[in-house]
Length: 243
Image (cartoon, rainbow, N blue to C red; front, side, top):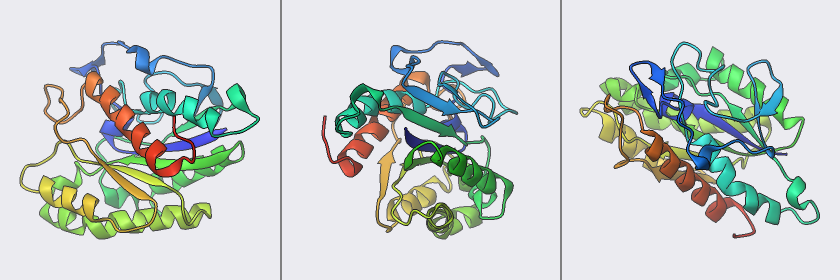
């Protein structure tokens, strides 16, 4: 099983199709379930992945469509080509960890969310190889000038800590530069995201993707686009076989 950790805050957890705290239950074909794509539940059991992927993780908010299922469906054929002799038996394991409304300080080593993410990743790793962490977070840090100024150091520290605690010093880390946030500080956070200078870190840009009426969360259509952008980044930068 090829494992991907999904983490960050609400736009990774998914708010596509959520209006007035209700999800419209619309699942685009790009997000449809596939028997080859599993998710690690909050109870640490593998089950067929389906939207909303984070429903039992980000439990205090209403979850909708995120980028994870689109990403998994897009990379699955390439992973099968990249695994000689295994063919269609290659599967994907998604590990949802994102929680809405969280600042990066809540993802520091020793904090509950960080330790939960690492624990879930370690459990998943018993069943396959962790391929990458997909990270979309920073809107909460754009609410404060001090937090925005500290973001660069915090995100590099997070990446280093995750790699050290999982014993994977070259673990690929694909982060999403913000599409929304407090206008006073969003550019500071985005600059920090693009300035990360660590090996095997790739940044994709969500700016310009359509937002829900709250002007904060990506629409379902935008999440589909983002999932494909994340998949393209993973395939281009971290797969030996192109497809």
